[in-house]
Amino acid sequence: MNLFEKRPIKLQLLVVFVMFLLVTVLVMALTFNQSKKMLYEKNREYSAELLDKVTQYIQSQLDNIDSVVKNTIYNPEIHLYLQTEDVLEKMDFFRKVDSHVALVTQVQNGINSMTVIGDNGSNFNYMSDPYKRQAVMETIDEISQMNDSRSKLYYAGFRTIVANGSEQNFFMLGAEIRNVVPVKHLGYMVAILDLDALFPQFDTMLENGFGNFYVLDRNGIVSAGNDSAMLGKRLDLTEWNSDGRYVVQSADVPEIQGKVVNIYSKYDLQRGLEKVWKTYLWIFALVVPFMLFVLWVINRNLIDPIRTFMRFVQIRQVKNIYYHQMRLQMTGYYEITVMADKFNEMLDEIGNLTNEVVASKTRIMSLGLMKKQAELAYLKQQVNPHFLYNMLESFKGMASETGANDLLDHITALGRMLRYSIKGHEEVTFKQELDIAKSYIQLQLFRFDDRFEAQIDVEESVLSCCVIKMILQPILENAITHGLENRIDKGHLHLEGRMKPDGDIVIRVRDDGVGMSEEKLASIRMDLAAGDEFLERDRNKEHLGIVNVHNRLRTMYGDEYGLGIKSAPGLGTEVSIHIPGRRGVPHV
Image 1 (cartoon, rainbow, N blue to C red):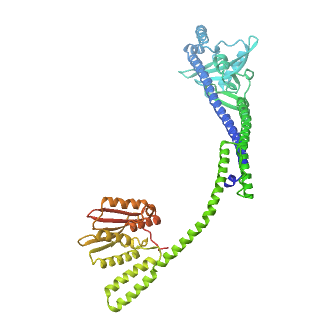
Image 2 (image 1 turned 60 degrees about the vertical axis):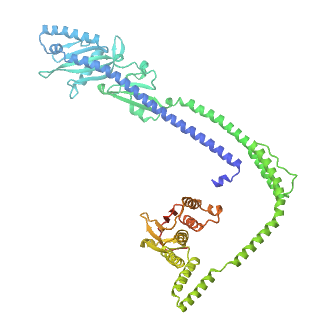
């Protein structure tokens, strides 16, 4: 990305333009493919709905025919007609059978004719037409070859029969006639069904259908459909499924052991998308010239003025900077003209400032020299801490020779504090810090003639933790100087250290001195919250040491650590130090 940002703007715009074209083409391609998928899925769903509608229609027609046919094969008069041997009785039953069949064919739409053939040689409506008789006998042969034909209707399928000198298409239905008690085979019933009554009119029912619909019988013969050219022909679904150009969907019709099939071409399905693709091309043809025009405008009003500015800057670098007769002239966007005017104003300002810089250069050098001289004078007035430490060692030797043991202890404590403050690492163990605090308390007890008592209670686990040094002495000094020094009677100073469950350390310095007012406590808390701005606000605060400790802790350990203070007039003051419980070797 950094490398791209450093390229010329013109190149970047060209890259952005090419990327825009690529993204546009990609989006169009993805959208087109998604539209294809959606159209394909929607058509599959619609085709499935149509198949279900056709299947339901056929099922309803078959249910009506089934009830009528079953009523016929279980009719007692037909059973008696097929069983009686008496001629007169047979004629009487024949009339009843004829009446029943006539009623069935008239009432039930779809049954063209019905034939009953018995094992005793009796028959009814045994077709005189040889073509119909052949169709009937073929159906009976198929039923007789079934393993279990009892009480089952057998839809033999599509047949083309020559009737009255012309070919007509029918659907054959047959069933075995059996006596119930005793069980006995009596004969067969065969019905010739009209296709128009059994199957729907696809041209009207499927006005919005897509592709071709076919109804296949048990032999795969097209018995109905919106493609009349395929009527009576075998439809090989395997061949259509293997061709990737077509989509084949089907639904089973169990009663006739057939199927309802919808076949449509993928090419025909996608013909509607041609308009979408043409629309995309028109959009692309309009967007590209528009984007080129935008690039030309940007180049004319932005890039060319910037290049003019760059050439002007290069000329200024070559020529004298005080060559005022030359001015920057640029045309383009409003911001470009404003930039040119401001740049010319800057050139004028540079000329004026140059004179001031040259004039003040000597003065700055003089001030720097004066500062160095002041720092040198300040250093000369400082006392070397090593000199003080060496002198204390000399005083300690004299006290030892004279037997001033108390003085020797105090000088030793003072020397230990001085050496601790000027030598060693910035970070120490809390035990080392506590030892120096004890030395400081010893010196203050000597100074105040035991006007207070000191109590120290620190857990063993705290002593091995690492802390920055010189954090206890300023707090002890505040407690003694501002709290216990002004107390009339004897005071008490408590120093305790505890480790919290989370591993942090809390150190408390508590005195029972005079305490402080709410106003002063609020002022100290404001100074603690001020952080580094404290010194800028007021350099003469009397509690500078405690604020310095607070800032050192926050700088070293983070803002969640530092000091907390509580106090009340006459009840003393408590300062708490919150630091992390870190163990290890102290480091610089």
